[in-house]
Length: 213
Image (cartoon, rainbow, N blue to C red; front, side, top):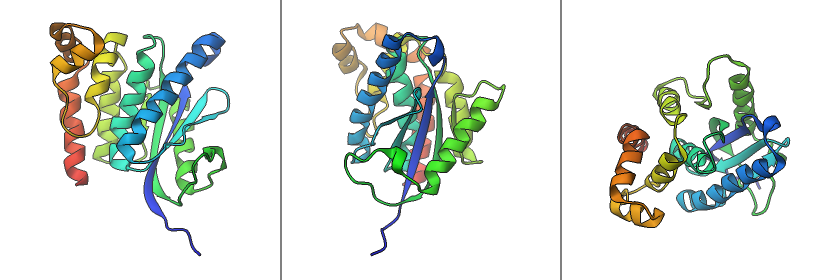
């Protein structure tokens, strides 16, 4: 029986500056990314199959490609919560792929979309322009990725912590509820979100959502 193909996105990442990190900090980075992937499984309706690759690389499978930018930003925020020095390249490709069984390592996946995501990551790392987040699309989606990447590269840990719960699809939580969850004042959350460029990022995410509906 031929496997049914579905349209997915593959996000391939690589920890920046990993060779200068202590083993403990590198493990912290991967724990933050892995924990984020577990949270994002609720967004996508299935396991992301978070897989570590080549020591400082990692990869996830996104069942809902329209949430790729939200997902990438969530990974960035989760990692940045560990410290401003924590960052990662992320390359996103979309395409058809077959189903994957629970517990399967993505290193075993051979669908072309996985190859394309890896190639895009290699291309990003070879360029002198400081782009850490990229999408294979050559249109508006790619442009949104580049601009949002520029905004979010400067997030502080406090800004990342404030914006992370705001990235989930659906209605955004109130500033007051986020403040309560983080043990901060509403004023502190407002200041952090303003500094993180949340309003502009939210508009971009909503534009992508509406386009995909």
